[in-house]
Length: 181
Length: 152
Image (cartoon, rainbow over all chains, first blue to last red; front, side, top):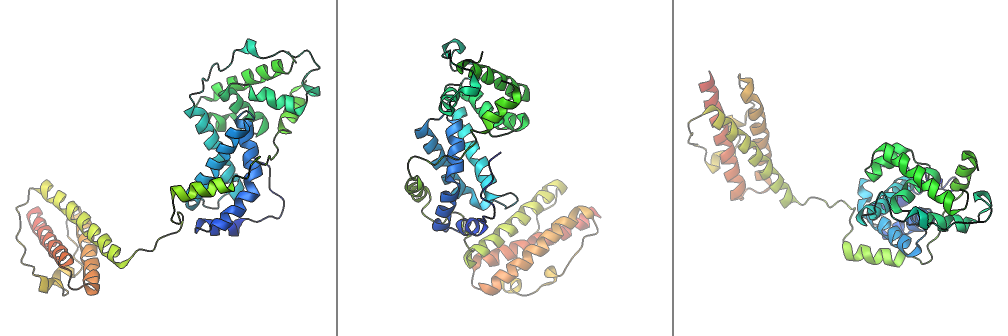
C-alpha cells in the first residue's frame, strides 16, 4: 500500500476545489502527490523513466476527469494511487505482455558477486526492470507495494494461483539476476 | 537470504521518486485539449431543460400505459380533452386509485405526469407541446379508466 503522507497534511479543501474545476487546486494536489505516484509508476514500468513519466501524466489526467466520482470514503492519496496503478496495469495489458515469457530465464545475467543482501539498490532496480512485465507487476505490487494476491489477481485479471506462480517465478528470476541462486 | 530479509529489502524500494521533468505543463495541456470546460463542475439545469425532463417523464408514462393497453387488448378511446380544459384542474387530475392493482401503478404515474405538466404549463402557458402532452396524458387516464371497467 502507498506510504502515508506527512502527518497532519489535509488536502480535502484542494480536492473539493479541484472537483469544482479549480485547476490551481489540482496543481497543488499534483505537487503533493506526484512523487509518490511517480515512484509507483517507475517501479511498475521497470524503472523506465520516460514511460513512468507518461504513466504519471496519464494518471493525473484521469484523476482530473474522474474527480467527481471520488466520494471521500478513502483518502484522496489512496484513491489516486489506486487509479494510477490501474493506469500502469492497463498499460501492461494493452502492450500484450506475455504472461508466460518475456525474457528467457537463461538470458538473465549471472552475477558472481556477493548475494542479494550486498547488492546495490540500483542493481536491484535494474534487475527488477529486466523482469517480464506481468511478473514484475506481481512482484512490485506484492513485495514492494504490499498488495494481497487477491487484489493483484483482480486487477491483473488472473487467477489467484497465477498471481502466486508469477510471484514465485519473479522472485526466482530476481535472485538469479542478483547472483543469489 | 531469508524471506524476512528479502521482504525488508523489497519494501525499502517503496519510496517516492520525483519525475525528472516537471509534468504539470504536460498535464495541463492535455486537460485543455481533452476538456476545455470545467469537467467536474455541476452544470445547473436550465428551465427549458426542466420542461424537457417533464416531457420525457410524461412520455415514459404514456409508453407504460400503452403497453398495458396492448396486454389488455383494449379498444382505442377518443379523448375529449381540449387545451383549454387541460390547463385547468380537471377531474382527471384528482387522485384516482383503480381497484385493480395491475392498473394502480400506471394511474400513479399518470397522476404524477399530469401534475408536472400542469406546473410546466404555468411557467410556459403558450407551449403547444406541453398542451399536447397534457391532452395525451388525459386521454391515457381515460383509457385507463376504460380498462378498469373492462377488467371488472
